[in-house]
Image (cartoon, rainbow, N blue to C red; front, side, top):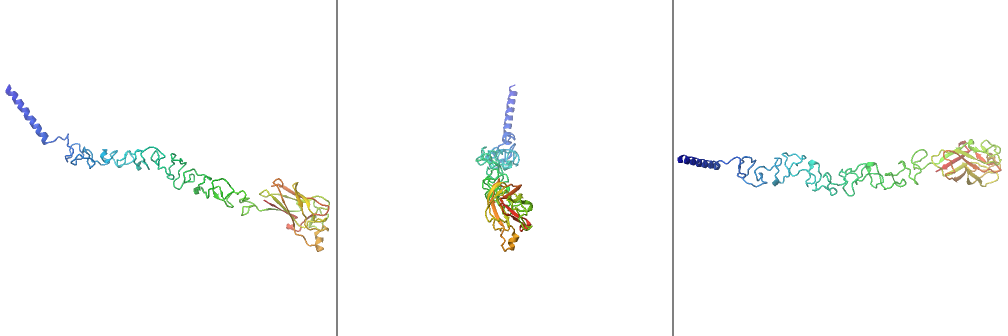
Length: 373
């Protein structure tokens, strides 16, 4: 019995010695030794040391290349998603997780800046999409003052180059809006009208400078041309043939009735001055002022130049009396003294002698009325 037990003990001792010898001679693949220079088991590399950042990690589990799926902090990797693509949450150099505010500008994510925070107004917008400079094409409301718009370096028709909303009168010339000047006011009387250099024909009437800007009766200097009305026999008041010796002259018949002219206004402006011209008006009593009125408003004195008591210019000419030039009388009128677009009447107080208008001039008409702006 004792012999049999001894044999078992001796057998176990031999087995233990054999197992120990195998462990020394053939290392187990389940427990590789990193740093021995031999790639074993789960090792992906073994450069003979356990130092990192030398192409093989300290645990021999990574070749420390970006894109291998292992985050190697020793090589400053912050992520590694197993590829070299950017814009997917890990940059193509494995240095950034591509989140705004991490201090890394991730172009693949559309970042133009990243100052390490999520605050705007400090030179980098809260979404890391703008450097908050006027003219970059991005409206940045966090700047001081806040940008109203941003149309890029050249601006747009709606946005000035200083990133404010464009409008005429804002003090900034915006050529994209067709502006030629900017004086910051809405006046139509100065050299800049509606943000364009004022000139005759620009579509604006400069108050105090221009009377008009194109159209009927407006000349090249943007002033109204005077309006001329020729008075025919039909436009004469209380004229008869009692005192004339010819068919060319119509007089008042020496009856003391008022005489004068009528005309219908079609001027494009409200006249301020009315001028009456006629030839060979005869006042037999002599040269002296006669009273006149325009549409019932007293216009003051009326002066007859020349004349003769024959009441007949034709007889005066035969007697060697020189013909007198056309008589010109001018009156200033008020806005209520003249009917624009209607009938006007200039009445001359008659005397007891012959006075009237000759038809020798003005193309056979008896008087000429000129109205001035």
